[in-house]
Image 1 (cartoon, rainbow, N blue to C red):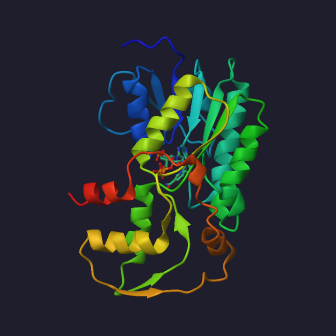
Image 2: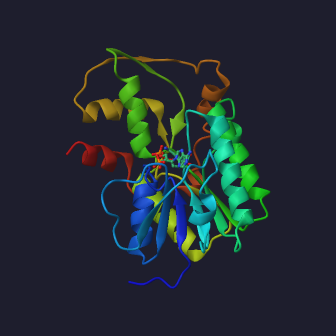
Length: 262
Ligand SMILES: NC(=O)c1ccc[n+]([C@@H]2O[C@H](COP(=O)([O-])OP(=O)(O)OC[C@H]3O[C@@H](n4cnc5c(N)ncnc54)[C@H](OP(=O)(O)O)[C@@H]3O)[C@@H](O)[C@H]2O)c1
C-alpha cells in the first residue's frame, strides 16, 4: 500500500515500545523512518527505512527529518537523564531547522511531574517542557509503566529467598496497547496532551504475589507496613504513577501473566 501521508520519523523505533509502534504504523499503511544508532541486520519490511543517527551527538538529524510530517520521539536513555534531555533538545532544534517543521509526539510517563525525586523522571518532565515551548505542533503522550517493564523489575526484586513487599500501587499497561493507541493518535494528528493507563490499579503486593504464583516460586514475603522515607517511593505510595480516569480496557495483568507463562 502506498501512503499519501508524509513519512513518520520514529526515534526509539528499535525499542520495547518502538517495535510494535512501527509495526502498527506500517500496518495502517504509513511510511516510517526509524532513527537508530545501530540498524538491525535484517532487511526492513516494505514501507520502513532505517536512518543512522545519534540524538545525543545531534549529527545526521537533518537528513532523517527531510519531508517528515510527524516525529514520534520514543527514544530515551534511562541511565543518563542529562543526555536524555540533550537528545530531546537536539531533536527539537533539528525539527525547527527543517524546511518543513514537523509535529512532535513526545512519549512520557504518567505522574513523572509528581515524582521528580527520580532523576530519570525529572528528565522526562524537562523533555515535556522543551516540547511544549518548542513552537512546534505537539502531543505529550503519557503512559503508565509497561507490563513488560514491571515484569523486569519484579524479576530483580524477587531474586532472593526473602522478598520485601512495599506499599503503593501501579497501573501497568500492555506495550502493544500503548503502541496501538499512540499510533492512532499519530495518524489522527492529535495535539495537546493524552494519558493512557492500564486496565486496573494494582498494589505492589498483588503484583508481586501474582508474579511469584504465576512462576510457581515460593518465597518468604515480608510486607512493610510503611513506605521507606525516600521521596520517590513516597510518591509511588501516594499513587501518583496511576491514572484511574484513563484506564484502557486492554490486556490485563492476569492476561499478561498467562501469556508470558506459555
Ligand atoms: N518502560 C516503561 O514502562 C515506560 C512507561 C511509560 C513511558 N515510557 C517511555 O516510552 C519510551 C520508550 O521506552 P522503551 O522502554 O520502549 O525504550 P527502550 O526499549 O529502552 O529503547 C530505547 C530506545 O532509545 C533509542 N536511543 C537511545 N539513545 C539514543 C540516541 N542517543 N540516539 C538515538 N536513539 C537512541 C534506542 O535506539 P538504538 O539503540 O537503536 O539506537 C532504543 O530504540 C520512553 O520515552 C519511555 O520514557 C516507558
